[in-house]
Length: 323
Image 1 (cartoon, rainbow, N blue to C red):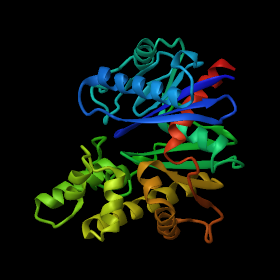
Image 2: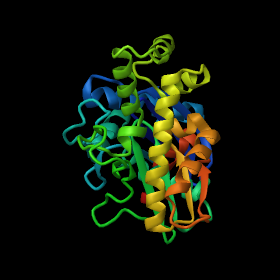
Image 3: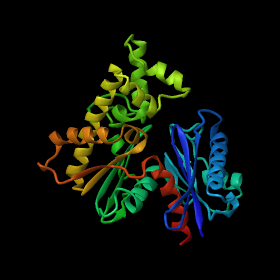
Image 4: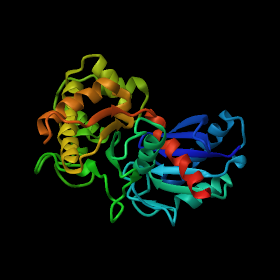
């Protein structure tokens, strides 16, 4: 049996899986993304997660065909480098992630690709996107990413930047986005931007339970779970911020649908998965006023693979490169 490890390197967690060449999940493990220590600290967590996932699959990491890593930022797959991953410490400059992970694990084959691309491929091949030749996948997590399948194939565009729906402008001269521009979807719906808005409101004297919930959870950041708990407790600020995110997502996704005329939209990512079906239905409702075709034939679906999509997709990279 051939098996590969896949790593989803996120802003708050490192999710790992071991998957066989038919897509069957054999083992999994999770670690917390370090907030300091630079690339070496990130690689240490990746190595620990791969070993733990392999152990869960009842095998040694040296038995793996290889390791695939889905990461945010600008990825040079041929060189195995990553840069510009704002939520990872020390990744502002190019980091030779493939070689560092290979050395840490003594694994010969390490393949690196963009996290959104690998998640999109996983959902299309094994998840809720099966059967659709034209598909938009939107991941709402630390930021907002998008992946496109057109004509049954992953579409990356002329410069590899297709699907960057998080930086589609929803408000002219609007809120500052983590990318440095203003009015992007990510400035309203990304978890990093939501946390920034929540802290600014609390500093200005707005009552909220968000900070207390984060402190009780022992998290260094306001994770998707923190926002979910605040919503469940009826926190007014959390409800206001999530509603603003829903409206921004509805505007941006509807605009993308008008341009591309896809068959289906999948919504996932850390926040999308945590808030689940009710959140997706709210986004679908928010799309309606902005859609050119009424009623729209587009299907709006919840991702099927949840927070394993990125790691499963990363594992597929290894089998793709060994086929």
